[in-house]
Length: 258
Image (cartoon, rainbow, N blue to C red; front, side, top):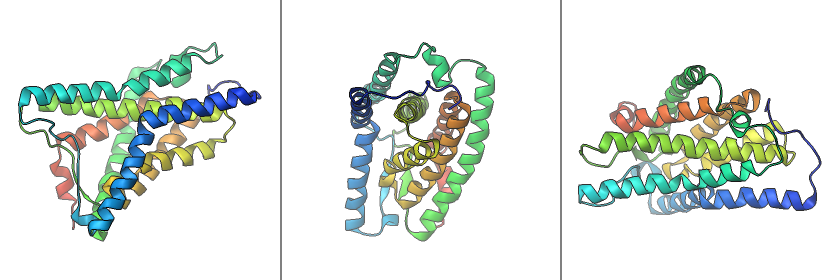
């Protein structure tokens, strides 16, 4: 990380507090998802071949469109609460550098968008290849990314869901997780690989193929963040990947060779 906090020896009490914060934030969000994904994968495997299973995203919560919209918005809003907690904890660090600079969200926004778009094109193409290969070899479930029905609010909600995923995952994994691990004295590649495996773990409910694909994505994202120290390109890339996947679900059918 180019603009990380100055390395210093932490007192035992400080180390315990930082590890507790990492565990707390993980347990409230992505770590919880990882545990459920592992259990879900075990459930799928115990029932039959993985490629016969379905992984449904953005599912309807009510047969009544008005209430379904309310449920969707509540789910998106509450999912971002751990992000606020992580940002609050970061503001309590003894680092005079503004948080926006520490996380790499201030500066040239158009350049960040351009970098994010470039990563989206590379990783998006790779995601399709990994999905196709996983379906062909029987190690990936059928992913159905949009299951909200045809309503006037469907597209806006799917875009909000994509934005939520980009903000939630990248802020917690790199904005919080990487900076905390760096402060705890972990080396760059230890951080990159461990967070890539963590990212992949909460996608296990989709099968082994998406797990491997997310490891690769996590390594690319991690290398970028540790080298450049900028978070926004990763948020943009993640948002674009999910937005295209949610709004053009048929694109997965084009590469489904199973």
